[in-house]
Image (cartoon, rainbow, N blue to C red; front, side):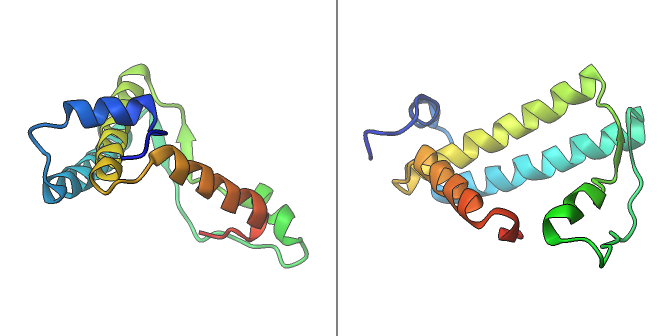
Length: 130
């Protein structure tokens, strides 16, 4: 393992005992992502603190690529209530835990990956269309 691992990744690696197999980690990562989606869906359908009003994004042809961003919509209305925010944060935290665990198992440094991705975003700018 690299010595530059973040403290978070070190802690995850230390506490990852039960799900040490890469297959366990991958399935838990996928499960935590699904639980994040479910927590958001419940915020919309059960609580109602946020709404989703989705439609095809309109791209005005007279605007530059850099200007289009201000015309795009996230399709989310409202604000998460404290309960829903907590539920979603918990699930995202689990996803981060299993992402860090996967990095440890594969001998990757999550901080290095984050820095590389940040550099890609920074250098490609608006052309980093994912």
